[in-house]
Structure formats: C-alpha cells, structure tokens
Length: 281
Image (cartoon, rainbow, N blue to C red; front, side, top):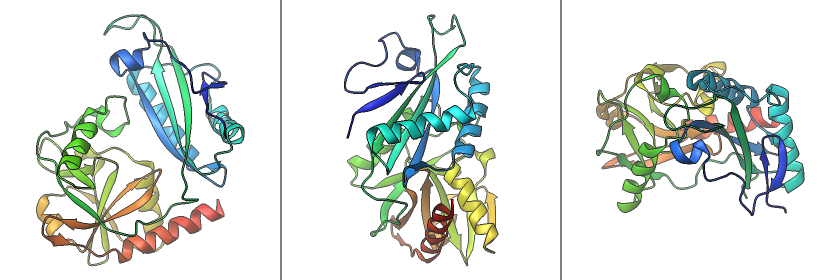
C-alpha cells in the first residue's frame, strides 16, 4: 500500500514534505478540516461533509479553489482510495488560506490537502468495553459562530485529551461558558433517559457533527424520540446511557462517569441501524 496524499488536486508522495513552512495552516491555524469515514472503498456522508465544509469556508472567507466542487471533492477521495488500496480508512480533508500575510491575509484563495489512513475495522462498530470519562474542568469553550465548525484551532480538544490521558480516562466532556455539557474531546454526545435521546443544542456551542445529524435522523425515522436541548452534569447522573459520536468511529458508549454506571442497549440499536444504512448506501 502506498503513502500518498492529494495536494490541490494532484496525488503526490506523502512520505516527504508536501506543504511549505510558510503555509498559513501551520502558522496561524487558518483553515478548517473534515474527517470522513471510508467503508468498502466509498467515502460516507459526502454531501453532509461538503455542506459543512463550504459553510465553514464562507464563514472564514476562504475562497474554494477553482478545481474543487462537490463532484471533484468525492472524486479526489475515491482516487486516493484506489491509489493507496485503503478500502477502510479515515480520510482527512484540510482547507487552508494560501498566500502571504500575518494576521491580515494578502489573499483569501484556498488550497487543500487530502490524507487517508487505514482502519482495520471494516465498518462502524460499537466498542466492546464502555469508556471511562469525566468533565474537563480547566477551560470552557466559548459560544460563537466558529464553535459549530471544525477549524484548525483544536487547542481545546488537545488540552482536554491530555487531561484525560493524565488521569487514565478514555475521554472527557467539555462545557460551554454557561456550564452546559456540550460534547466530548472527540465528538458529539447523547444521553438516553427512559428510551428518549437528548443531545446538546447547536446553540450551546457544540460542533455540528455529521454523525450527530445522522444519529438524529436514524432515531426519528425509527420512532425514537430525540430532543436537542441544554444539558448539565445533573442530567448525566440521571441518564440510563451516555454515548459519543463522530464520523469516523460512529458510536462509542460510555460505561463510567465518576460513580455512575451506564448500559448501552439503545447505543447498540442505533449502531445496528447505522450499519444497515451504510450497507444500503
């Protein structure tokens, strides 16, 4: 299998320098990214990722390159799958502002890279053992228009992950500036109480996750009630289940939050629905 990446529409070797040192993604975190799952050689949820990426690009005022549209976005990923042989993998698309300048850019033209890393699991799978988690207490994420998008400024999630690692935890949950629980360091979150799903509202500052939206749609289509609302630590203690979602792993259920223990019945049901939907599409 070959180590290849796509740089601005051209497949190049990934085991040597691809971008220059003055790239604005490196200097200023000036851009955004999408993480897609490849299953059976096909990138999943392409439409949803494309919409989120273009919406984020408009917010950041980054112009899409002329050789990048919805059709080429998918075609470039499929080409990389075929060239590398990675039929199951994590695909990362990064869009960055090109050109010179310091905080004030000289140009708003965009450039992009596409990377593909293999995953041994052929499709989405629920974790065998429940995650151990807690609430990250050191910082709180602000609520603003950037909060919903996956910008290259990921420092909150890096710091939260380090905090979890230092305490022997699998993951942790972030709070917004109001103290509401909004997401984990690796994705969106859902709780289950009496068979009903609850997930933080986008108005509370969580990332507008592609898998979050898919879980909501699958639940509604199968008669499972879903509410988008503000959640606090007391809601976690009263819940029957707690699970996290992201576009690469699907659902990951939590077994322990402090002294609270959780089941994973509905998480398993939704994972089965996700697998069925993936097989159909």
